[in-house]
Image (cartoon, rainbow over all chains, first blue to last red; front, side, top):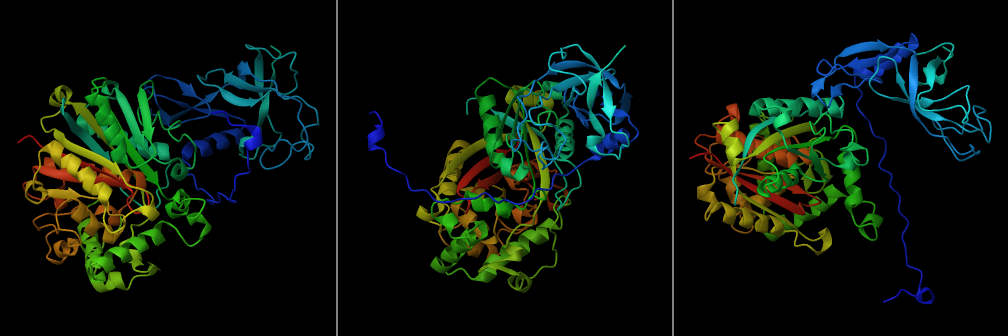
Length: 169
Length: 382
C-alpha cells in the first residue's frame, strides 16, 4: 500500500542525547618516536624484520608477517605524490581543524582550494596523508616529486610537518 | 554434529585494571600466544572472528584497525558486537559449514578506555526507560536481585557467599586481578552500597583483558594436537527486553542449556559435567545461573552455595577460575570461561585445577540482566 503524503501525520518524538563522556585511548611508543623525529626534522618509519617494508608513520605490528616492527628507520624528505584530492572552496564556518575554524583563525583564506595528497617518501613503503603547499590544483599530478615542509622551529608535535611542496630537481 | 570441532589452542592476557598499552599491542600478543599454544602459524588459519563493542572500543567498525594485530590480514574475517561466546559460535558455524578448517576466535574489552557502565545506560529503551535518569545496568540488576531474593526467600548472605567463593578462587588464578583469599560474608555485606541490595563486592571490577582460542575441524585438530577439547554441545537464546521479562528466572539460559545438553547427550548435568565456568556479572546471578543450568530446582540455587557444593572441592565446582566477579573484560568474559573450561579438561589449570575433569560447561551472557545467553559443553578424548 502506498504511503500517501496527505495522510502523513507528525510522529511523537523524545529528545535524546548521547553523552558518553571522554575516552582514554592508550598510546604506545610509536607516536612519541615519530614526533620526537619531527622535532629534529626527521621522518621516522618502522621496519618489518620479516618483509623489510618500511611504514611511515610508524606502526608496531606488521599484519602481513604478523610480527612486531621494533626497528625504526629514517626516510628521505623527498617523495612522490601517489594520489590527491582537490577540495571545494573552503567556506567560513564549515570546517574545523583541531577544534578551530581555519578561515576565522586566518590560516586559510576564504575561497581557497586545498590539495590533500598521499605522499610516499623515498625509502618508505606506505603513504602519508598530508597537504600540498606552494602549488595549485592545475599543477598537481600523480607522480609529482615533492619534499617535506617543516615549521621553522619544530616542537615535537604532529603539526611540525606542515605538508609537502613541489621539488625542483 | 556432522563434523566434530575442537579447541586446539588458547591464550589469555593478564586481566588488569589499567593496562598502559594500545589495544593492538595487547591483542597481538595474545593471538600470537594462542597460535604458539596450538603450535601453528598464522598462515594455517582460514578465518578470524572477533568480539568487541564499538562503544567500548571508542571507534565505529572497530575491527578495521584490529585486523592486522589479530592476524586477519588477507583472510576471511568478521566480528560480533557482543560476548566472545557469540564469536565462538560463528567460528564453529564456519567449520561446520565445511568452508573453513581452522579459525581464530578473539575477544577483548579494555574497560579503562571508558567506564562500561556509562555505555550500558544507552542499552535502555530511549522512549521510556532512558527518560528516568536513575535507571542503568546496575539498577536494573538490583531490581532483578530483589525480585529473585524476595520470591524465593534468598538471604543476602547466600548472595555474598558467591563473592566470597569466587574471589577466594581468584587468588589461585594468576590471571585475575581481584583476589581476596580471606574475604568474609560480613565484609561483602559491609562493602559500599551501589543500588540496594547490590554492593561493591557483588559487582566485577573494571577490567582490561584479551583472550583468544584456535578452533579446528576434527581432521585438522588431530594433526595439530594430541589433546583436543571437543565442542560437544552448544545452545544460544535471547530473552525479551527488560520490562516484559520474567526477571526471577533466566529462561533464555534454560533454553540455551537444554539445547547444549541435548546435542551433547547429557541427561543429568549435575552428574555428567565435572566443572562449570559461568559469567556471573553480579553475585546473585550465579545462583540464578545454577538453577537455569539444571543444577538446582527453581529458587534453590542458594542451597548449592550454602552447602559448599559449588566450591573447589564440591560436587559441582562453579568458577574455580574466580569467574566474572574477579575479572570482567566485558566482551572477553564468556570466551575466558570457555578457555578456563578447556584448561580444566586438558589439566592445564594449575593451582585451580579440579581433579579428573572430562567434561566442562562454559557460559557467556550479554545484555542487561543477562538477556542473551550462550552455553558450550566441552569434552576431552575419553
